[in-house]
Length: 148
Image (cartoon, rainbow, N blue to C red; front, side, top):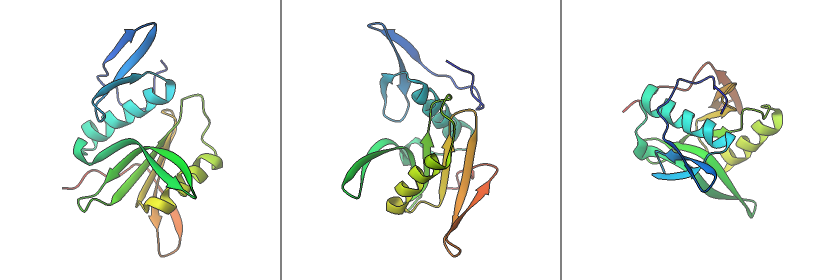
C-alpha cells in the first residue's frame, strides 16, 4: 500500500485465503484491505491517537437514507450530546478529490447536520466547518482536537 500523508499507525494486517485484511479498531473485526480502507484506518488512528477522540463516539460505515436511496458514510464522530459533529469521507489515494466528492459529503450533511466535514484520499485532506449563519463552509487547516 502507498505511504499516506498521515502519521504512521500501528495497523494489524493479515492474509487469509489470498486476500489481505486489516483490523478495524472501531468495528472490532478484520475487513478486506482496499486502498480506501487503508486511508480510513489511518484516519481513525489519527483521530484517536493524535486528536484524542474516544472510540466510543466514532461510527464507521453506517447506512443512512437520502431521498429513498441507501448511502453509507465512512466515518461519523458524535459530540457529547450524541449529535453528529464530524463527517469524514475517505477515498482511495488514486482518487482525485473533486467538487463531486464535496457534493457527496454535503448531501450526507443535509441529513446529518454535522459541524465539520473532512474529505481525504490519504494524500490530500480538506477540512471545513459549517457556517450556518452565512450558509457556507469555511476551510480549516485541520480538524479540532477532542474536547471532553
